[in-house]
Image 1 (tube, helix red, strand yellow):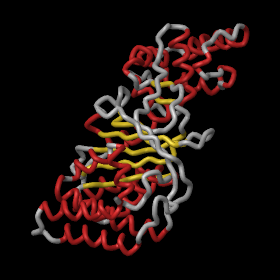
Image 2 (tube, one colour; image 1 turned 45 degrees about the vertical axis):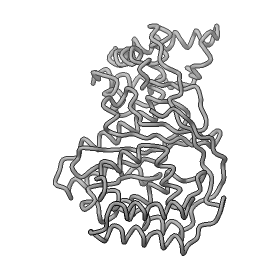
Image 3 (cartoon, one colour; image 1 turned 180 degrees about the vertical axis):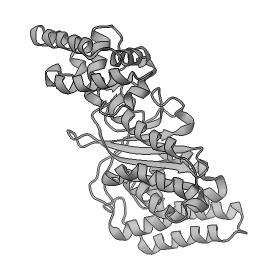
Image 4 (tube, rainbow, N blue to C red; image 1 turned 120 degrees about the horizontal axis):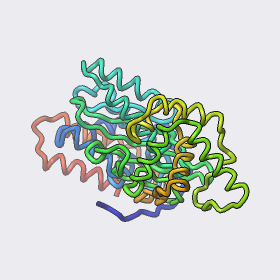
Length: 362
């Protein structure tokens, strides 16, 4: 497992239309070539690797430190695959902002096209987003969610990203079905960010006992849980002995809202932490309050280690270190298109085509 990090400078800007239109075409040819050589499953494996993903962004025309790599590369792949999903055996749903909220409906559309029940993927998409917004509370608000899956409904991958409003840094979360057997225990293929913070990390193995306690608390009568919170509130107001690292202010909690949520979880009685996360209305504040009781009342600590392992920065397509050669870009698209179109072409020639593309950007 890689444990190194990349420290990259920051540049501002965005991809112009003329560039993105070419990125879509090149992404299409790369997808066709990769599926032809390795199959759609390998595409998911490689996209789950943050270093490979960053390199793909470079091949598509972004600088190695460009801002918008995540959203633009995923967008180019999605547009490049459009209309070829069944042929490729690969579907891509979701995207940035409003597009991310369309993920469930796009998965259902694919289900109709394939004649399969993909309700499991709809659930997976939702719970993955819930994990990175609620079970991992690192200060990043999710704004991009891309869900990729194979047409045989056996493999899936997620690339999502969050923004820290305070320091304007971004964090990218990579998921791969092969590495996420338990969606709430060390499920990430990688998490990339150039900033590390104190984090409520309930997907760490170190948080197992705390998760079990939190789940048990959600099954208790609401008045018992609220009683513990009020005791902690009085303690915080009078003695200020609560550890600062919690960055939880009980005085900011809406007890009326929490009572409604605790009543709901008490009625449902979720059997495990994942089931609790999937309950509608259970968000970061609910989990924070239960985590606080778990540690300060029952002595079950949760991990505060930031799970980010890779570091990367976002900059802009601003011509650094050089502007894109539009004519050369078009030639690169044609090179890969011919490599895919010609069924008789050998692997060595296809590899050489990719090398030529690499030399163009190198």
